[in-house]
Image (cartoon, rainbow over all chains, first blue to last red; front, top):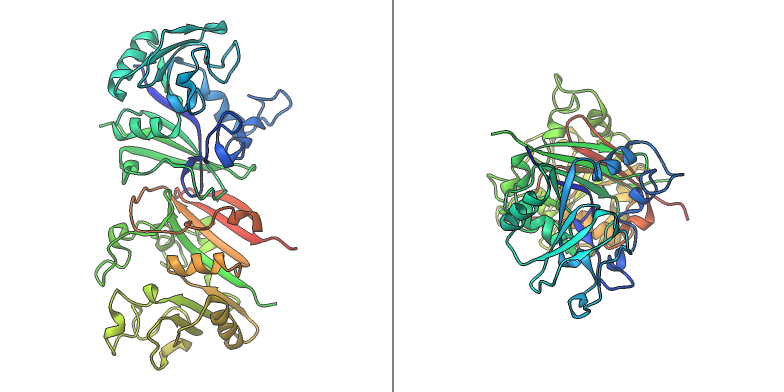
Length: 210
Length: 210
């Protein structure tokens, strides 16, 4: 059974998954790195990092994943569609190592990177994109990689089986809200919470079996 | 030193401190009792209740408090000001047992209840109300009792020394947001988080010493 999974998705106390304005210099706007410091401090990202509960969650990002779906706002800064040479933020060897489907209203030819990542560009609904990604995932799971609106769209469509959400104790005040339109979304999930010494709280949403 | 404290203040994952619409039948609107179930399940509220971390926080509500400040929206349902006999939700012996200052644009004479609670009605800024409440607190602390807008106003005014906030893993979608206008409010506090087996996460905001 191939699951649809979200990992390491961080939001502020007021529910913002990114700050504003987003740009090439500040991919998360005024949030800077504050939403992801907990993750960058783990051994999964830094060999000298922490090895506790933050790392236990962070390292679940890759295993069992056969494809990723991401939004246009994750792939590049506003306007990347106008740059025919843009191939993502991540250099020649992106950290996905699978087929990676970028949702955009302006598809372009696929780009094969080093390390197993191939970017494909799709104009598709969440359900259509998931069907395409699942076919490419070789029986493994599909990760919804963000940004905020893509996570929200997949939750709204009822397509998420597992979501690891991280509440960071900061108040961003502005940016892109995750929860808009998602009233009572928790009713479809078993939810577990565990706080970490770093100050963040990990929430695990597991889809209820019918 | 008399501190200004907030206790057991519960918000949803999307930052709402109450649902809507608020009425005599549904003081928290469509939220019902969901924001406070964790508290009502503790020994502080129910002798047969739980005695763990939820209770450890819940029972800090009263000790050391000499006065409370609450907003008009906590004292009664919309329109209570038109009912000259309204004396609160809590029956003859309210759970405050101290002078209790109700912020309202339509003050009325004070009401002395059983058990040490006297309701006083004030039209005042947060700083003025705090000065009045502190004078009545006999050297003890002042509790900011809510509702949401009063907590927000006191945070905005920089008047809060200690805040116990409880994040309940539900998405309310609508109601009254706590965090509006409070960007970066956490910078003035040391923040600690601990999740409870009940599923809620307790956040303790302690004002940084200058």
